Length: 127
Image (cartoon, rainbow, N blue to C red):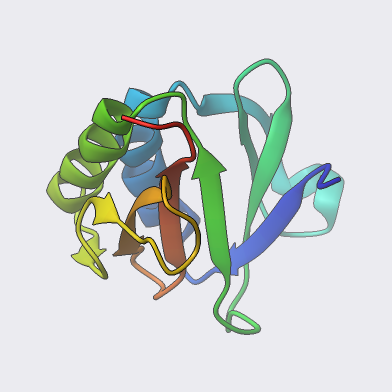
């Protein structure tokens, strides 16, 4: 079971602007901020629904690209995520649609965030 995930970004302000808009439609929002004075120099943002589980931190050079998938309850939310993420400056990496090579009801959309991380919203429920 996944408890939380973290990724590093070059510009935490740009990441915050992107994720605030991109994740809002699927009910994930900024819940917690840890200031640089507590981390030794890097601001950390915690996103979630009822508790933070998606953490973003500032780094001069991100350590690599990640793929993060957020489960949502219906296909309309996948579409809303994709639209919001593109409007927030994300780059399309696979528009909303079925991915039957994963399983018959896998409906997802993919975007690249400002640092090139592959961010997905996915619904596993039948239409």
